[in-house]
Image (cartoon, rainbow, N blue to C red; front, top):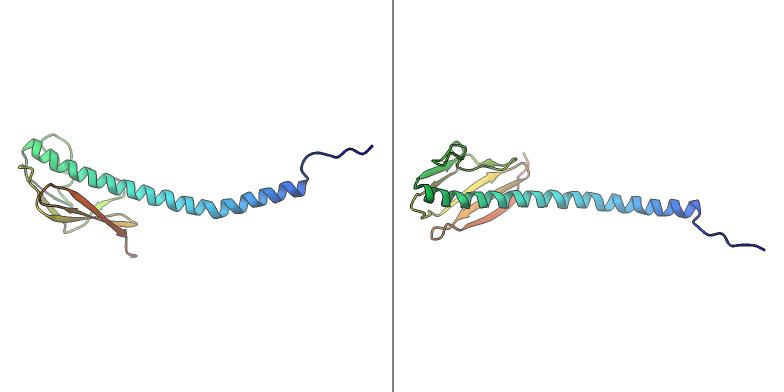
Length: 140
C-alpha cells in the first residue's frame, strides 16, 4: 500500500522563491521611478495652485505685489508668506511676476527649479489662468 505524498518539494519551493526574487528585481526599480515621478508632478501642481491662490489673495487684500526670489517669503497683509514654495523647489533667479490688487493679470512666465525638474508657469492675461510646462533639469 503506497500512498502518494502531498505537498511541495524543496526544489519546487526554491524555484518559486527564485521567480519571486527575479520579479521583484525587475518591478521594484520601475515602481520607485514611477513613485518619484508622481511625487514630482504632485509638488509641481501644488506650486501652480499656490500661485493661483496668490492672485486671489492679492485681490482680496487689495495689495499690489511683485513676486521674485527674495519677496516670495515676505508676508502679505494677512500675515502669511506671499508664496509658500514646496520643499525641494526654488524660485529661479532673475524671474519676476507683478501681481495687481485689481485682480487683473499680466501675461508672464515664471520658472521654478528642483533637483530633477524645471517648471515654467505661464500666466494668461485675461483670467489669470496658469498653465504648467515642465522638463527634466539639465545635468550640472
